[in-house]
Image (cartoon, rainbow, N blue to C red; front, top):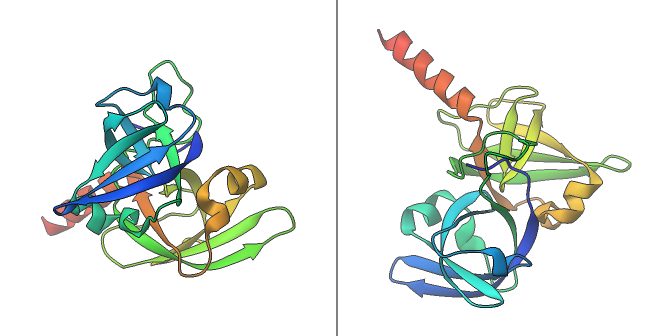
Amino acid sequence: MFSGIVEETGRVISIDKNKENIDFTIACSFVNELKIDQSIAHNGVCLTVVRKTDKTYTVTAIQETLVKSNLGDLLNNSEVNLERSMTMDKLLDGHMVQGHVDQTATCTKVEEAEGSWYFTFEYEPGENITVEKGSISVDGVSLTVVNSQDISFQVAIIPYTHEHTVFHNYKAGTRVNIEFDIIGKYITKIMKQQLRK
């Protein structure tokens, strides 16, 4: 379980294909605190540490993960949002994020707003929805939805988030990972089941 509060951006050091899987080796400042088997969110995708050195660690993304996320778009030297899993003694500053990406979305517009930014995203229609002022995770960043539409939404980004996450790399056409609010997903499923009765 994660909060959607990115600790820092790591950097992809190497990408190694292993059959249908990809091993990503990443450098970050807290490598010496990591353990094998530990869960870390990478652009919002929960992956397990499988190897580590003094300066890097390695995680494996399986085909299912690569199909549903933007991790396959990463290149050597790409920045990636990182968050270690929550502990029960920490404040929940964001919202409950599982690290299970629902689908990707595409950035369609970036607008500066005199000190902040508005990012617009579109996603393929399906069961997932957003609601005005509801929570959403974009590449693992806990955000509040503004301008909720049927297959698009906006988020407003403060300078700190813009500087300390991969948001500063986004432009029209950038593909991002989306995890919709878990409470909204449960309500949608329950309502559909009730309507079928």
